[in-house]
Amino acid sequence: TAWELNNKGFFIERSEDGIHFHRIGFVQAAGNGNLLTYYQYVDELERIQTYYYRLRQEDYDQSFTYSKVIAIAPSDEITGSVELYQEGAQGSIYLRTHLEQPAALQVELYNVAGAKVGSLIIEVPAGSYVQLLHVPVSAKGLYVAQVLHKKVPVARQKILFVNE
Image (spheres, rainbow, N blue to C red):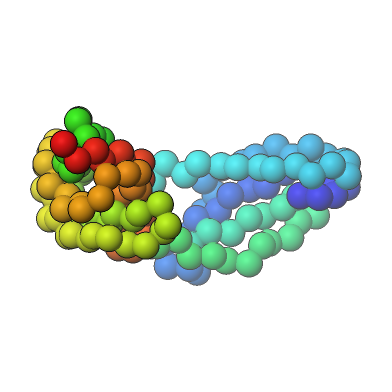
């Protein structure tokens, strides 16, 4: 909030159907003030599905207003860790993952001018996984490798290649 007057706090309400809401939490407000204040609440979800949320902002005099209803759907985000690393400088990098579910990852390689010089897609299984990636680079130098999941970057690493 940017400004508050007699603000008691916020009741967080959740619904599975967008119609019938129940309270799941309360966040105490600052009360009065004109300083920018951030509030947060973490919902410990019972199961992964679409949930609907609204806030009931209540004042000390018991008056209240409801926020608009928003829907939060499960995302396609990757759950786990993804890492790129290099051992040596002869054109090889490693992809190390620990994922809760299998995923298709795209590895892209860019030169220092920002031009894409290589790309490959890897089907990564759930659990711990390491794969050696042979990178056909023709020129020594600094490159940037990045890993994407559904076009969203999840890891990035600078790579130095030295032809020997």
